[in-house]
Image 1 (tube, rainbow, N blue to C red):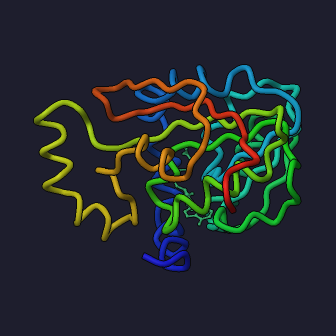
Image 2: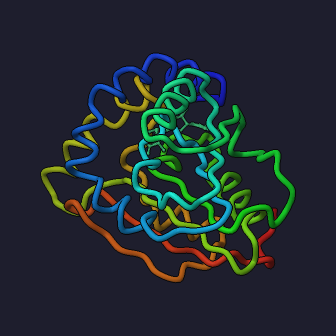
Length: 207
Ligand SMILES: C[S@@+](CC[C@H](N)C(=O)[O-])C[C@H]1O[C@@H](n2cnc3c(N)ncnc32)[C@H](O)[C@@H]1O
């Protein structure tokens, strides 16, 4: 799917994601908390969606969120208000971030590389705009390492992609490796479906 087709598909998803967020909190909340609970400084949430990550961030951060979907951002704006948080939200393509090099202390992103038409470009953009002494934290999802779950994902992969533009059988470690990023730490959980990354920005990575 193209960037504009993904944008259209997420216009329909915004309210549904909001309604089913309790499920995310139950299954993925602990990974978000572990990756995003201690971040600091000027933080960029890439593809912030409806703002699911916001509740896990320390109150002290200076938050900027970007997403391609205005409908998702409208929900994220409501989330900021509900949490009593300050933050700036902008409509933007993750594959061409409109920020200068070294703009953020921390870059976070969750469940996003599966939907970017060009995840390598988006990851390299995160690397570019993060300060050299900053950190990139990702919580990604992909193909399970448990047979029956993986087989179900394989069976539904095309239908799921057609519906949401999400490649849920991706291998997040292969994607991050292909972008050439320097992984400091990575973990896997939830039957191998969730992979987290702590990445050190690397100025040697090509743009
Ligand atoms: C599965 S949702 C995840 C949202 C949020 N990060 C979360 O953890 O709930 C994927 C998000 O990526 C956004 N997205 C997809 N392609 C994008 C792009 N090229 N640039 C910016 N956002 C994009 C979608 O609009 C959607 O909000």
